[in-house]
Image (cartoon, one colour):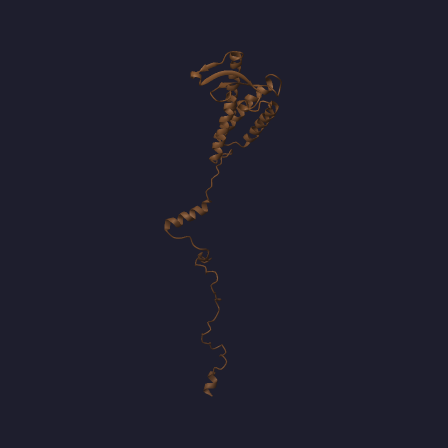
Amino acid sequence: MLVTVALTALALDVATKMVVVATLQDREPIRLLGGLLTLRETRNSGAAFSIGTGYTVVFTLIACGVVIAILRTARNLRSLPWAICLGLLLGGALGNLIDRMLRAPAPLKGHVVDWIEVPNWPVFNLADSAIVCGGVLAVLLAARGLQIDGTRITGKEPDGDEDGREGSAATGAAPPKPSEQPGPSGSPAPAEGADTAPADATPADAEPGPDRDPAPGTPSASGDKG
């Protein structure tokens, strides 16, 4: 899809520039729609919309870098909207780059053919329009969290935490505290700080058994008989 969109944008830009140069060069502009749209052939040595007219070589090198960056990024492309976006950017960049490389006055310094004029706006061409549309689409896709590889970035919490909270909300019970988590045998674990005694501990007030020595000061059975 990226290649298809890029080739379509490039073909339309090159074809319209050829027609404009053949029919409007050194001629009066054509006014349409009551002056809302004017077809005027001009030459632009700067960037899109006649920005930076004194830096033709710089913009040519930047355009080459943009084309290379898009081609490298396309290796990880898995999203149709991003394919359309990058295709528009690639086609527009190539359209103006061809003018800079092949048109007068010299390679890398060629002037771009612009021919679309609307009120209160610089003259532009279809390549400029493709670049602007691709840039706007890139901002929208990034704002929605859609990545080039087709994944989507969300600000939600992990599913485990959400499931636990949803379960607690459904039953009306608060989530168990750390001290109330069940122990290994399924019974509630004792709370932290609670006194626990060994299983084989003998209570202090338990009666001594027959095999135990009586406490000091306690008469023995043999002493009672004597």
